[in-house]
Every structure is written in C-alpha cells, then in structure tokens.
Length: 343
Ligand code: ATP
Image (cartoon, rainbow, N blue to C red; front, side, top):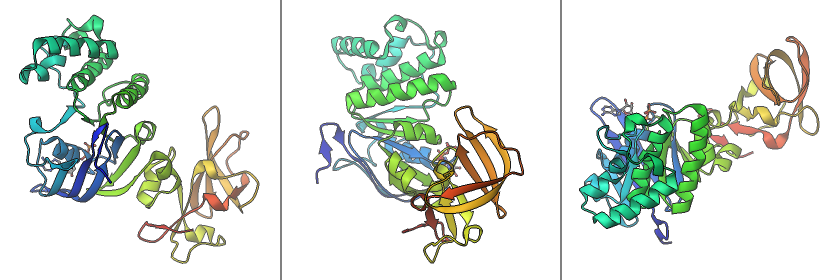
C-alpha cells in the first residue's frame, strides 16, 4: 500500500502519548488520517483533541511516539517546516493589517515573489467571495467574514494538510451551518487532507469522511459517520453519536430478549423503536412528550428504566401505556466493560 496520493500524504500518528506535569492528555494514539480525506477528531471537553492537533502542528511535542507525513517523520521539525496550514478558533487575524495583508502574511514572511502573491490572492479572494473586502481591517468585518479570511489565509498557502480547531464555535447557528458546507466543499475541491477538531457531533457527522472518537486521552473508535452510527463499538460512542443518543437499558429491564451471554446493557436508538411489525413487543408508561413538529420524542418508563422514542404519532397524555416493538436488527449489545458484543 502506498502512503501517497494526488491529494498529498497521509498523516500518521504512531503510539503517541502526551504527559503534562499535572495530567496525561494522550495515551497510545495510533491513527492514520488518510490523504485527501476530511478527518474529524471528536470528543467531549478535555479528551485531548486540541492537544493532538497541536502536536501535529508542531506547537507542542509528544512525550512518546512519532508523527509522519507520508514516510517523512515530522514531529521533530519546527512548525513552519511542516507541510501544513492551521485555522484557529479565534481566527488569529492581525488587527492592524488589511484583509489582503492578513491573507498574504505567511507568503510574505516566506518571501514568495510579489507577482505570485498577487495571483494567489486574486484566486483565493474570488474563491472565498472576499474581493470587495480586501482593503478592510478585521474589525470592520462580521464574524463570518473574519472566519472566511482565516480560511483564505490557510488556503492561499497551498499546503496539502489543513488543521482546524473548532473554527466555527464563534458563529451563530445559521452561519455555522453555511460554513460547514463551505469548508467541506473547499476541502473536496482542493483535495486537502483535513484534520478538524470539534466537540459537536452534528458537525462531525455532516462534514467528515472519517471520525476519530476520543475519550479521556484515548481513541474509542475510528470509522465513517455511517459506520459509527450503525455499529458503535463502545457504550461511550453509542451515547455520543446520534441526537438524541441511543437508549441504553440495563439487561434486567429487557430480560425476555435473547441476548449474548455477557450482555449487561442493551442499546436501541429512539428512531429505531417501532409502533408495530416484527420484533420484541414491550409496554411502557408515558412520562412526557417533547413535540418537535415533524415528530415527537416520547419519554417512557420501562420497568424503572428510561426509554426515549421518536415517533410521528398523536398527542399522548402522561401515564398512558404504550405498546411498542423493538426490532431485533436494531438492538445493540454491550458487556459490563461497555464493549460491543456480536449479536
Ligand atoms: P476542549 O474541547 O475543552 O478544548 P480538548 O479535548 O481539546 O478539550 P485538550 O485541550 O487537548 O482537550 O486537553 C486535554 C487534557 O490535557 C486536559 O485534561 C487538559 O487539562 C490537559 N492539558 C492541556 N494542555 C495542558 C497544558 N499546557 N498543561 C497541563 N495540562 C494541559
């Protein structure tokens, strides 16, 4: 197998650990982020995703392990010698420089020829819709426009690997959704190898080719969004992917379901619970209903366990008994350590 493709080179993280004096941020990270793909590092606050991105960027050094770009070891190189660009959450624009000067800053520092700079600026400004804003200062731009300038500065460097740390967290919900598809389209168009950090699973699911789910400094699972949703390997992943997340019911509350011997927890997604058809019939008491318009989320009590169902039914008064069906193929089985069991 080759590590190179037209999109550039794979980023390979080999047995990475990062210890701070007061904390272990990362332990045993072995992941390949494939060339030309959009990889997302996803996990809750403090799981180590920003630390991992900083190690790739060269802003910090691993305690153990190697980072390779293709076959070249890069973890001992200074940041500017690595073939990558980075977009920060804060945008990190220079307030006293114009948009054009901000975009070209890196190229000027590297001594790129003026004519080349002008041509690249024209291209990237057209691509990002920034032509009319080039003379302005960052303070004269909206949040979305500032974000676009930060993206343009990364794109203009024409480096094959782009690192982004929560780049959309300062934007409102509508703009965030727009920028999601803009960044994704840009990545595909330029064939960039993207490494994108977020704690937002919707952002991860909508943008990624592959998601690296992290928890407490370790990798829980690496998979496509569809595979993560369909086959979470751990309870942590099951409860982190999906809105609302998968129901996780103690086996005792579903004792009549045939399950692998070691099963401690049975999982089923709220949208997989049926009103009729084949499967395991259950009866549960309605505790409350959250009406969402197109459908509703019904909170149920199942022998003391909580169960959430997404359905498009009629209004349900609390206390009603509801007959439902758990389709066999929609059940997920986990052992006491939280690991998936084969069905
Ligand atoms: P967030 O989404 O909140 O940014 P994160 O997943 O990016 O979280 P990191 O910032 O990578 O998490 O932090 C991982 C762990 O390492 C945390 O426990 C954090 O407190 C610790 N940590 C990070 N940087 C340092 C540092 N410079 N010194 C000591 N501990 C640190």
